[in-house]
Length: 84
Image (cartoon, rainbow, N blue to C red; front, side):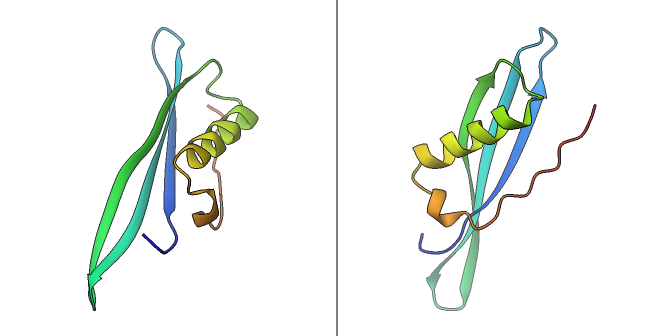
């Protein structure tokens, strides 16, 4: 995988107030010229003490990207954090 990777993140809170955070990566492979194949993979899944804290979410995202060795492949991080 030589190009950029797009990531999607999701956070949620279980009924017992445990918070969880998942990161999925998406990229395109071109193993045969002009034949593109979309790939996706779960890059990381972690439990958080406070799923609504944006600093903690950003830290968790960086930790996952660093752990799988692709920090340099992510070009831009844009977050939408709702207030609910």
